[in-house]
Image (cartoon, rainbow, N blue to C red; front, side):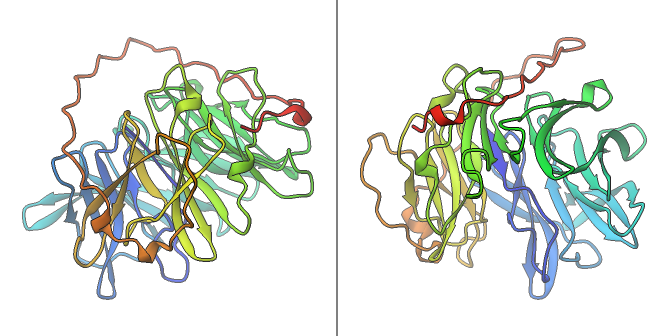
Length: 398
């Protein structure tokens, strides 16, 4: 399984991170800030068993809304708390009736303009990283898995955002770098002391951002203003290492709606165009789910389950999308969706609040995972091939 979610941003106006939940790369665990009355506390979701269940992890004091949480592969939850110009990191785990806490260390921000946030969960679940963005440069910190607490592993000129893992080893990290007046996606090789190389260069004067990537097939979801100069950004797709141009399908251009991909179906090694892609769609009637494949000309619009942890979900290899949700009746639930097998007309989307979890299929027990093969010594990470400028007038828009 693979999971992706909208990058967790700092809380605003007293609310939790926008994505609502963060899920490990293998879909085994999730973590979020939950609310008990007026108090926030971390909550871990176990997602790889017969039924999902949540474990509250409160500590002696309630968490601030700006606290960031992330699940680790062993079931512990990483917590990042802003405290007096620093970001303090600790790991929480259940201990019967209470919560155990292991302090890791802290990262000091050089000035009040520096912003630090956790990067998406790294493959493997043993390490965790954070991105500190300053006035003129950005730093990648390894905050879990190091020998002596948080360690700065890369320094990148320019202001960076985003954060997408390109491989299964947690070595190749893509970031959107703003340098001058343009934003381009670059690759940071954490196995080569943070060596930087270009990834997206669709046009010299375009802003090209990477939103999602699937390490199995190389499918990339991209947002760029290259295909419509002066007309705003569009959503497109390409394949890592391919010589074909980036494509910007018309079906992903929805009037008065914001379309954000949040999960890609794994396992389609030789057929990236067959990967299911889950879209979060925000429009005048609320938020709902779009299901799409690159080889199709149509997005299927489906109502999200009530209580959806918006922008969060993961695919199985056989093409079933899992969406976590929480309601008063079902505090920890998972709804399932699949891309329709035939091209049929779409019904008008319904607001998320009108969708009922009872209408979704219950989650099924996960199949036992096969034992993984040991990594070869000193693995050689593939070097991403930049998606360079392409003849935009002849773009395929299927």
